[in-house]
Amino acid sequence: MTGPGVRRSRRTAETRVDLELRLHGAGRLHWEPPEPSVAHPVDALTRYAGWDLRIVARGDDPHHRTEDVAITLGRAFRGALPARGIQRFASALVPMDETLVEVALDLIDRPYYRADLSPTTLAEHFLRSFATEARITYHQRIVRPGEPHHLLEATFKATGVALADAVRPARRPISTKGRVRWGRAR
Image (cartoon, rainbow, N blue to C red; front, side, top):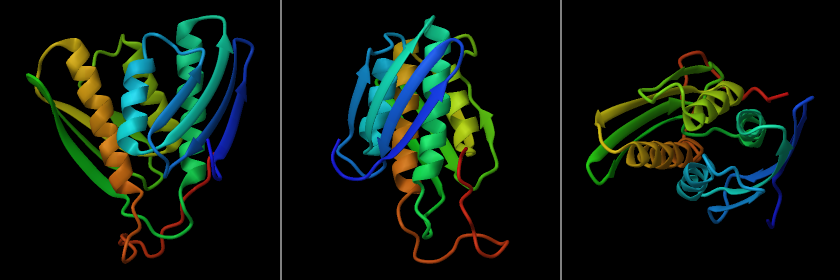
């Protein structure tokens, strides 16, 4: 990874995560070792968001590693938001063969997560943990259902497209409450 990035670490009894995120990158993911159940969707997110993301994660089981990577990424994302105004709102409608998924989000520091994904998957848990720690309002809906792999891939791509749009510079402040200040993650 070249250029300045935001670094975050997380240490628990179960895991050790070191992460570096650059919001305006080339869409590259380096995950050591990759978590097989979510590496492909996270790679799609990284590419479509235009991020450079480096993750080193060790731990006792896939659930704990996935959750702690998502928490750490959410905090890094929040910390990487620029001080100047950004678009804040964004949405994306993404097809993947027979599947059509829509993601809409708001980066305003009011965490909320709603998705039509199965709550038993690690990929869904990853998105929920990321959205909560990034303190974003996140909505995902399945417009047309399809094969589960296509559903996950379309969701992560749509999330990446929406995040890339939401962090673009705004020409004017977008808030009815006056000046928007982006809260920094712990």
